[in-house]
Length: 470
Image (cartoon, rainbow, N blue to C red; front, side, top):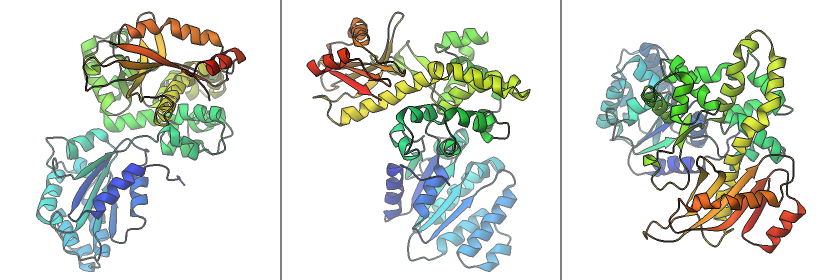
């Protein structure tokens, strides 16, 4: 059973909506297996007057019949169960039913009702305006097909646009909460697990009983009977009709083609052929466009690179999809050997950078410096790459000085010495050229393997050198 971890702000929002003196309408959406239904269940567990309906893909008639019978039981009206009624009549019966506390009406996988009947959002909007909004109810609609939820409930063209009093886009659980799933794992092992599961609760629970990450990969990912074996195909096929157009793009990015021109070249396509597909993948939270931290206007930057935002997709496309033919022939041992050879260097090391970025925010919030940065990312140009660039930007003053922190992240067993600090200092000029009134005020080195005595001594002598062994 999945443990309920974090989601504090989401629960607070739902409780606030519930406590409102008027009727409320909340939309919850996000990718599959991210914990939307678990959030709703946690919220409802101490509520007396709630009716939860899980819509199924397929017949509108069957969905309506099942819901009608649920409502009949909820309002203690057996005649409704056999009556020939429309959706509006069902919602009107709910609205008129008196309770001593606010009624909560939940429709999960809402998009399936709209898929079965494109007019359903309009029907529901009519029920909301004429009866539900005028009674003491809290409506929650939830869905896992992001494109469908946008078109049916959130976009300007939707009949329900403007009706919602709140919305929650469910995202993956942050790294800082990951240890709550694995309280007995070492930091190193947690990073290894995280690099495959990301913050998707369902994936995390699937990995929990494994001896180590390689055991989990072999038995939970490469096993043809596991849902994870073809998970990316399943998820994407629910969102787009032409999966075959998206898979090559994702694979190209997974193998390091991050400039749009490089992606196009790898696929033998024109850049203009890719923009629509990339936007869809961004909307689905599968990829993101990243620009150097030094860019003041990211949306205008011509230095943008694309990267896979979903760690499982990144792992799967690099190590599973590319070996699918061998796996189908039963050569799982060979594939595991290949994964073990490059898993750390070609995958985990990059995820570790994201873990260090989250740690930087923790350091920032705990007053590690006498200022607070408000912007963090990476830096790159044709000659230079820096893992961490954090900048304090005062947007109220045009020429205010900007304090900069530079950092490196090393996920290896070897202790890191003064050379890594010196190398970082040699690259700082590239950043300073891009930041008006910028000043390097601190250096942060993250190392899984620790540090040499020489570097530790340098850090003791200079409070602006921060060493983090994790």
